[in-house]
Image 1 (spheres, rainbow, N blue to C red):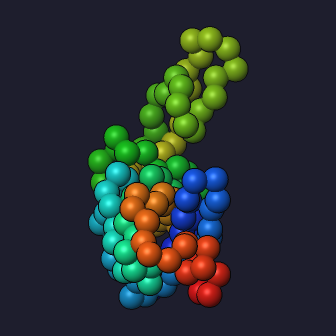
Image 2 (cartoon, rainbow, N blue to C red):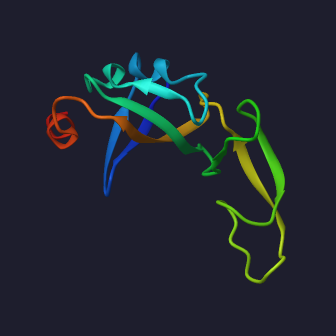
Image 3 (cartoon, rainbow, N blue to C red):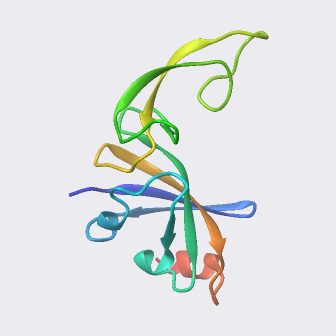
Amino acid sequence: MVDFKLVISEAAKSYARGVGDPQSAGFLGKRIGESVGGELLGLGGYTLKITGGTDKSGFALRPEVPGSRQVRIFVGEGFGFHPERRGMRKRRTFRGGAISEDTVQINLVVEQKGPKPLSELLAAA
């Protein structure tokens, strides 16, 4: 049984929602950048894009890492590392960009709006 915490963002407002089986099975194997139909979550007419997430250890999902493996990457800038001085680089741990059983949180953004407002649909849930 896989449970995910979903953070759905629309403009300046974000909504958190937990999902379990069978809804969570629709996310397994998807990658960062892919779109998911809102019908999977009871949001008819909406299309949501996966923008990121975190794993069970708190490490961020990184789209350029294949699969769902955990790796240490030498980074100089971008998310997951903020250099203290110019030119500074460090090795940081990230998880691959594919959604797996080890993923805990999935970040989504609204690509296409449906007929009802998102606040109305998620307030009832």
